[in-house]
Image (tube, rainbow, N blue to C red; front, side, top):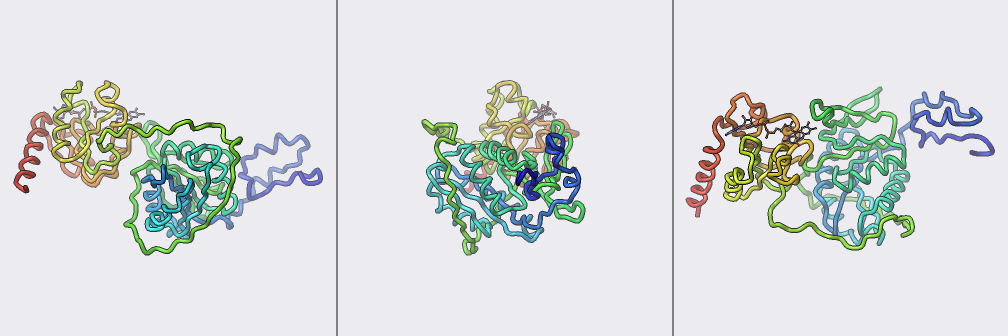
Length: 377
Ligand SMILES: Cc1cc2nc3c(=O)[nH]c(=O)nc-3n(C[C@H](O)[C@H](O)[C@H](O)COP(=O)(O)OP(=O)(O)OC[C@H]3O[C@@H](n4cnc5c(N)ncnc54)[C@H](O)[C@@H]3O)c2cc1C
């Protein structure tokens, strides 16, 4: 209110219309809502670069890879946002992965993630520098931070995207966000044409990082944003790191050998996959029914409601290839499918298909790999 007059700041108005009926003196005219917002001040494709204990998470470099493509298409800078305590050493990596600028926020309050401190910092940075797009990894942290920022700024947010590109809406270049919908049966294309920045979380391992360029020049912009400890509602007593089992996770392994219902319905039946994985230095994954039958932990599940993976080689045994499974493996370089049903949908996306009984084929494959390894010694 300014001298009893309602002033609507256009830069902040998202044309939702909520203020019109609730204003007790009918001071706000809907005509403002119809006015096309001016986004000319918004520029820059931002990537939230997640780090933990001073190490960059893979989602940052992956999103910078896709971000480069988007930024070039709209003619804007590609920028990384880095928060933490004493994390300046990570700027070299972010620069090499393609960031033109890095916005940094450092301090005690950013050592461990808290919704309040990180949201305050993101909201402050976005309000100050006005990016046109902000991308976050759909990690535990990203899934908490992005909706909190969207809520504070009244923005749209598309969660869990598997594809990003640029399209045109009413003569403006906008971010086209693609994600599975209706149980993975359709891929929905979503745009947020009426708000800036456009924000999305993206599943880890869907996008590919660029080849690092150690000679890239990057501007580093330091920001001091203090958040009082009273504003942070959680107290961190101890940080427990996950137990190191020595096994590479399905998301990180270059070779993943997945078993479905065709392998069997007990733990022992999966031993043949374990042996092949051992011989190939790979990791065993599974389809959803295998998790539901308590044969493998959820961390091994590949697909829409499990992990999205992009290994160099994906060997998929006794999996029919339901769309919910396929959506998680599209980033794989090579897919070899083994199934006794020649009409199984998994063959539609496999580079190589073997029709037959996996119980005979997998041990043969394991022997061949071992033979080859011995001959190379
Ligand atoms: C909302 C939602 C989310 C979902 N998320 C996921 C997900 O993240 N991941 C996922 O995997 N599923 C998911 N599903 C389940 C999915 O729809 C399928 O039901 C599931 O993928 C099927 O698992 P499967 O291929 O192992 O089993 P089946 O569909 O039963 O296929 C078994 C296959 O094994 C073959 N076979 C049998 N015996 C042999 C043999 N001896 N040798 C060779 N081949 C053999 C058969 O020909 C068959 O093709 C989801 C479903 C919903 C509704």
